[in-house]
Image 1: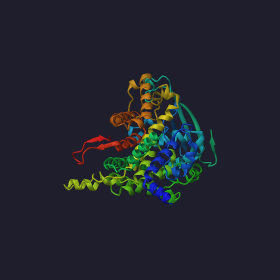
Image 2 (image 1 turned 90 degrees about the vertical axis):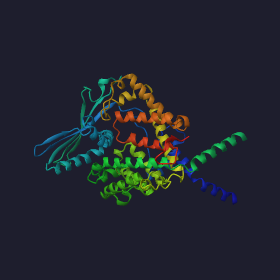
Image 3 (image 1 turned 135 degrees about the vertical axis):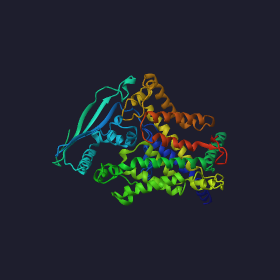
Length: 190
Length: 307
């Protein structure tokens, strides 16, 4: 009985030690690549409710294991019933001012890393609808909205003329979503 | 056997001392101040686009968001549900939280508000997050438990200005929140290094050359000598080596200053060449936790790293 009380007292006094060690193991296991740490699956499962619930989840795989081998941007084009149409290179960062590309870094993240991809196609229609509302707010009736991805492959070995702002390589493009707005159910995947 | 046991106990005792013994409040105070400023800048950059990213009429309406998320997470949305009132809360409490951290007034409450704001952002649209957001969310969480307001706060500054300094640095504070944040930085570097070491481009020296061709990240003009196979190899291996070595070398007293200076150089270079918003600033703010202030006077102090 007495040793039990001593044990509780021992733990009570040292709770920061347990918190620190516990968190370090949890965070390390959570963010390491699978197969890089023994017991990772078990630790992750055990700590998931806390790491997710308290928003301590994390990932540190920037440009790893392989950096993207394609330079990318996403563009939109639209037509309106009144006549005006437009093309907007939403995430062609290199053509933006230094401040704008800094402020719009999250746009790059959202469009290039997520909306662009086929696996996240559920993002396409909501964005097209958002765009429709924006165009309507300017007093026009949009009739067609298209989302297009543009890309060009990086090269090896690297040379100074491959720098994005001076590179001459033409872009490839593919319109991955087209929405005929006058017929709300008439959206088509390309 | 007894010898090993005795050594093990000794190591455990030093670890316990390292975590439990009270420390100088100034490194954490300075970190809180600069971290709070960065939280305010982060909020300002996000401010105009918040309705688009988080609004019910934005790019991620509730019915789509529900399909993308699962599990319980604490955030303002826990209380508001899918409501645009949460955007008002993020703006208001994010501002108050950042301001509180910057000034050291109600630092724990401010850290809580900052953490709630960062958590709400992360929950409502995780597709816009960068690694700087992760560091803000985690840093503010542990600041909730830290006595980070003991130094570098507005009250002390005003009193010092009036010629009545109140010796704010004599009160030592619990070390463990600072230790966790120090270890968090080590985890960031180590894990990033391990991930990179699994990719061929990081092992053959071509990774940086590839990244620098991506116009989506390009910021200020990149010097020509960097855009060569040799330049790419040097920067690739330096990045990989630094990330894997930092978590170990930063604890060696003699090496700490060189390691931190190398880290600052690395991130300054990345900040020049690459556009990742506040990431370089937020990660280097954690470096402040490794500083040691030599003297007790605010105006005469010199900074040394912790020996």
